[in-house]
Amino acid sequence: MMPIYIWIPFALWIAFSISQIYKVYIGDNVNEHLYDSIPNVFTTIGVLGTFIGIFIGLQDFDTTNITESIPPLLEGLKTAFLTSIVGIILSIIFGRLSEWAWGTAESNKEEKPKDEVTALHQII
Image 1 (cartoon, one colour):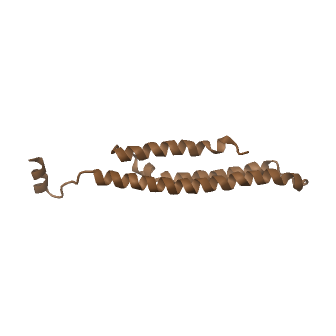
Image 2: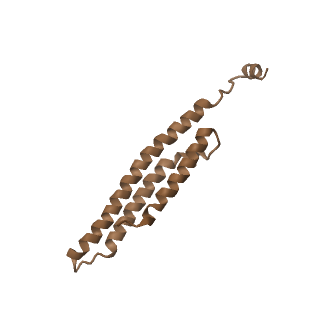
Image 3: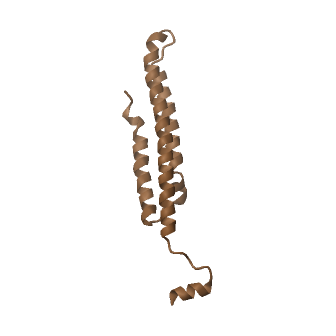
């Protein structure tokens, strides 16, 4: 069974990402650098989960009793691969969502005048 603490970073980043995507969608300001990092952080969390899973699997590994050590090692490797897969999938999903929200927000903005005469006409 996979430890619950492996999934907490994903849950927290999902909640944060959804809030930022929603803010952009409704037209609120967000930190653009942080917003752009949304997909990358999912991949990073997945890689971190990979290392944690391998570490968990190696904790009870006994080189003098390899036969008994294989099942816990494989459980750790399952966690490792699953977190990587989840991280990549979430990166793709949230990458597309964040691009869509940004594009929608940009298309909803009023076009700014390119010269002074046009700006004066808009004011009048």
